[in-house]
Amino acid sequence: MDELGYPDDEEKRLLRERHYNATIIKRMDLTEDLARFRIQCDEPVMPFEPGQYVAIGLGNWEPRLRGTQPEDVPIKKSRKLVRRAYSISCPMLHDAESPKAGELAPVDQIDYLEFYITLVRQGATAASKPPALTPRLFGKGEGDRICVERKITGRYLLGDIPADENVLMLGTGTGEAPHNAMATTLLSRGHRGKVVIATSVRYQSDIAYQSEHDELMRRFPNYCYLPLTTREPKNLEPNRPDYVGKQYLQTMFTTGKLAELVGDPLAPGNTHVFLCGNPDMIGYVPPGGDVPDRPGMLPLLRAAGFHDATETPGPGTIRFEKYW
Image (cartoon, rainbow, N blue to C red; front, top):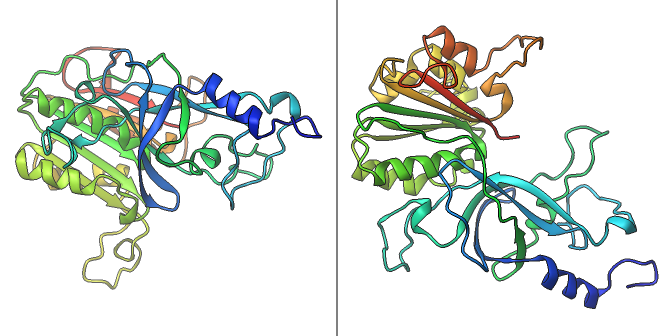
C-alpha cells in the first residue's frame, strides 16, 4: 500500500487477479460518451434469454477518466468493486473475421457478451454521488480485465409469441440493447410477423447499430428499424424542407406516424409491445404516485387497447424494463 493506505501498483495487480474474471475483447466507440463493449468471460456463461441483464464491475482502485466528476473514495472502500447491471445486447450479425461472417448472431450463438453503454460523466444533480462505474470503464480498452457476475437474470423476456404476430419494441438510447438481442433471436427463428425496433435518441450519431439494422432490413422484408431523433436540425427548424419535429415515441404513436412508417396499424389484436429506456418514456406510475403532465407510453398504449402482460397472455400485451 502507499503511504496513505491505498493500494499501490503491486497490490492493484493482485486485486485484479483476485476479482476479475473476464476480458474486454473489442471496444467500438460511437461518440466520446457512447460505446459498444464485447467482453469474454474466462468460463462459459450460463444459458440466458434475450432481454436479460448481468452486472459488470471494476475496482475502486481503477483510475477515472479525465473530465468526469471527481470521486473521493475512502480507504475502507478502495479495495472493493463497483458494479452495475446492464441489459445484454448482441452484434446482430457476425463480424467479417468470423467463420460465420454475415450470418445472424443471436446471443446463444456467440461466446462473448456485448454491452451498449453510455458514459455518465457526473451525477444528475449537485447533491448526487459521482457515477462510479462508467468513468472507470471508459478508461479501459481491448485486453483489459473486468468482473462479470455469474448470475444473468431478468424478466424482460420475449415469451411465447406466435410466428405470425407483430413485435413492436420501443426504446430510448441504449435501451435499444435488449431489443437488438430479441429481434435477432426472432429473425433466427424464422419469425413471419413484423419485427419493429423504434429507438428515440438526441442525435443520429447516437445510433450505434445502424449498419446492422440496414442489412437486416435488406434481408428480411418483415424487419423494420426506425431511428428517431429529437435534436437534429430537422427536429428543431420548422423552415427546413425536411422538418419533422421532435420524434418522441409518445408523439409518433399517438399521431399514427409510427404505424405509417411501419406500414401496419400495429393494433392490439396482433401486436406485442416491449418498452425499455427512460422511465419518462415508459410512463410507469406506482400505485398512489403522481400522474405526470406528459404521459409515457404505458397509459397511451392502454388507451389504445393494449394491456399489461401480467393480465392476459397473447397479443395486445405490454412488457417493459426501466433501464435506469
